[in-house]
Length: 272
Image (cartoon, rainbow, N blue to C red):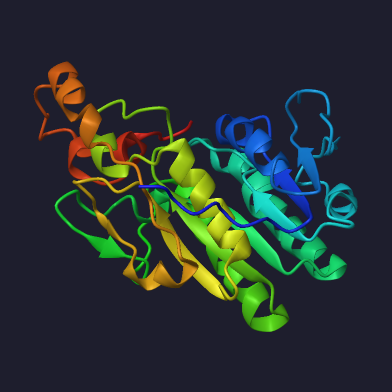
């Protein structure tokens, strides 16, 4: 079956966290679909290609973030700390930084943001439960708390200022699933791209929370409430199941990482 081509993106897009794992995946894909892609990170970035601007920026630097968003029409926000860390490390980039981003968006009139949230916002639900975005948050650490803050902040900026956001609670986006948990949480790179494109091009998104997972046979998350995005994942972890189960033939049911959706994040720390 041939799939319809994805629609064109807004002309000028900012990609934060462009040096990270998913940033490196999305950078050429977004550049091919917009007029200008501005990429930013605190880590070293590849030089600008045609149609790109490279602007290093620390998210906790409010004036730098304000300048970073000037002239942008949409933002794909992947920036920030992406692993469980002591709170002070999370605080600056993930909490102060997301506030700086939204305040800069308000001041520059940016109307649409894709916010890379995380499944760790609900990591303390069990793996024998299926939840949707209306379930109360149950963060599994400082990182999950920071993403819950970002979701709430983006809701406020929609309600008060009309800035639309799709908060994508990304599962596990890698070339292929690494373990049994990822058979449920895996998001292919192609499905990630489809999700970003749908989030930036749907006529109306308001404030939407969607779980980022492919069309996996095993799944803990129900995305019915986000069907208005028009996103339909097309890949599945199922072709990888036999190899994953051969590598991990048994599950330790005494390990919290095997019981809760957040996996190893539920037992990370304390940091002393």
